[in-house]
Image (cartoon, rainbow, N blue to C red; front, side):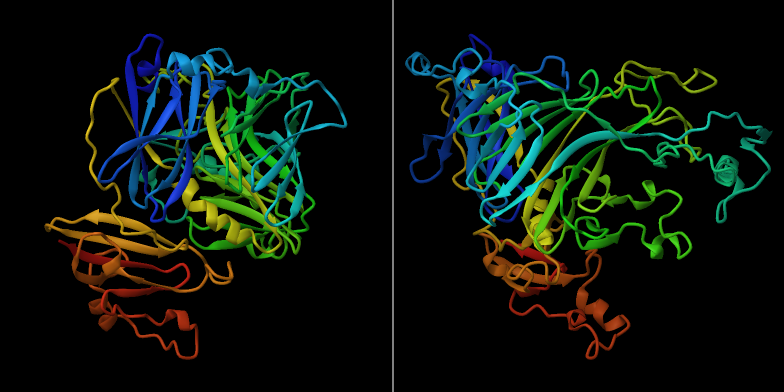
Length: 582
């Protein structure tokens, strides 16, 4: 929609609704693809007794289109969306600049020369981009990050940024299987707890016994050398560097043929470096690959690192933990994959001086395989099945696959897929890792929802006078996890969650009291607390459940009742309510 409306000769304005699903007010930089750099005048609608449009800060940058999207926009307009209300929205209008404005802007309509720098190689020099929170240094010859300074905390973390891959383990061996009814069977064995009707488990059994388990859709297993093959960053005489008023970017390329690209961005007022990575097509001429992003620092984490458990409690992990691998195998037979853990929202390392962490925009595997190091797996492409039920390699391509036997040979068609993702890198003082991650996890997980439409220029459009469901923002450590309309009229199910764990933050780990009657703009006439799943009243469940003696144990287990619509939330607690709003 925005591309069509912004093409040369178009006489349409673009309308953008930016919705905030968090329960607190937020500031964001919103990006919108456009096909002409002249469509860059952005205004925000001020809703009140007399609605008006006011200009907001914006910048237009060329779209690198590293993901090779067909028909991609030529430019991206970035604009500032300040004070987006909780569970609410702001309205913006993007229009073409007038001829008078165009004559005064040297950066249009061509590539914005004042934003781009081509820097000659100098071994002793670096590129620096900064905002009021961070200062980030890059190698001038490659565009690779070398240090990150948190200006508020007054600390600098020197880093070695790398991309690389593990070669996928495989043994291309045919198996002597016999037909047994509708299933293929080897020696008739089956894993404990499974039935013959659940398929052939013989490859798993014999593969484990002979130690040739393939890496595949279910199993991550590097080759026996356990080596990370590092991809060299491309040396160049002119690193792409955009230094606009709103967004700053440094581009870098990795690997032979440049099959990994990166854009590091810095936004005003944010305490993270946004890393956009584009991977693919992953070359497979020398076998399957498990691609990772790795950061090396001087942090003395002594083998410990932290990963989230489905976005809730942080779990302390230990490299080569004998409680995981057994006392006789402290390093495991699989020192790489055996030390990988799921990362749903965030991972971090820390010592007494520094903390270094990363939030993810999708579930990934991650680890700290050496002190000071942190790595995340960002793409996989294998060539052999791991015999765990899928029946094909993890080899996704951009066209698809032919049918399975007997209708086809399950041959992959096209090139390997190209994936794009984002990591947010955050540094801080020692012992602050959990607090830093908590502050970024919700905004990373719940990006603003952007809705786009267009209309002929000059069209009068009426918007509702209020665009927020809440009276005001909830505290920074409280989130509305669910807001569900029930079958009964005016009745809703809401879940409130405390987003910090005990002792993670001096202030935000404290319990919080919320008055539900002051939460919404309309009047709440009824509040009933339910169990977490919402299928029964909590009071009824409390009378039937086993009553634990909490006096000598953890006092946090003792429940706080619902008094006049006021509820107390303890660290990481989630409570569910059925309310009637009139």
